[in-house]
Image: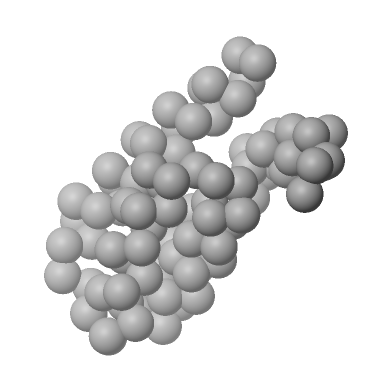
Amino acid sequence: MGKESFYVKMLKNLANNQSLARLEEAFEKKDVEACFEASHDLKGMYATLGLTPLFQRCSDIVELSRNGKMDGFEQAIPSLKVLHAHFLEIIAKN
C-alpha cells in the first residue's frame, strides 16, 4: 500500500493480538470450530503482513480444523508459537 508507517504499526500490534492465545485455549478445550476461527484470523493477519513462514505454518492448522480434525495439533501449535515468538523478537529489535 506504500504506507510504511502503517505496516510498522501493524507489525508492532502483532504482539497484542490474542488469536494465538485463543487457538491454544480452543485446542485445550478440543473445540475444533474455535480452532478454525482463531487459526483463520491468524492466517489472515500473517498474510496481510507478508509473514510467509507464519502464514504457511498456520495454513496447515486452518485446513485441518476446516475439515473438523485436530490431528497433528500437538506439534503444529507449539511449532507456530515458537515461530511467532521468533518474529516478535525480530520486530522488537527493530
